[in-house]
Length: 177
Length: 177
Image (cartoon, rainbow over all chains, first blue to last red):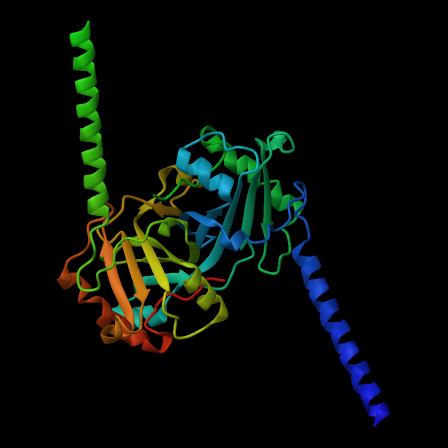
């Protein structure tokens, strides 16, 4: 009886260690920093307030939400440019898929909703005018759904693409009223 | 001199009264309750957290965000059905327009963003299983951008349209992960 108890405790401890290791490992992946700008995924970004939404056709073919931290939302609503240091804008993209269940109700193909996350699932723009002076005061990051950051080559394309909207402090998204 | 002072005070008072009247009038419009269900616009709904996004083609041709109050978000994340009383889901729709400025950067027509608000700008679904027992436990409301509620005929179409998704407690929108 005593031996069985010890065995059960041992199994329980080992299971606990395994679960802990799994959680730690997953956490480590999620906390991997994006190259160049050293940005990690901001905890709680999914709770941030809405700036706007968009649909990108072509190669991207996604539907997206653009969220902002409190500093971002305040600056947007006040129409303040440039965005102050501490501004963080998060962009979540989902693949763009027809909703069969909605379309059945409407009786026609009209409804498009978020599907499986693409590789460019999550992006951040982080304003730090000193740290990121070389790229217009903004740091850029991209992560897939598993928290794996995009590589350096990918991140080097961010700033040049944003230069045409320099007059709006390099930010494409306008606030949806 | 004294007469000019009195005149200036009189003008200031009248201007103040006019501004106050304007604010009160606008406030009154925004606070007009939707017919049947008696729902008013919930203050602060634009700060609620994101449930999902969607694009509706056809007659609607809008791009939309679906937000939820804290009770809604908690229930969604826990996958809890039916939604508890107190759940409020807000749906904001904007007309679906190409972004000329984004497309210029991409070199092709690929970006669609929120444009001017349509008449069905804002909708609410409010869960109160007793008050709204006759319509599956949900009250419905629709407002245009000026806060003017949709008429009774319009609101009578809400519940029948939601009946096909009764298995998901009459809610079309799924949580976007």
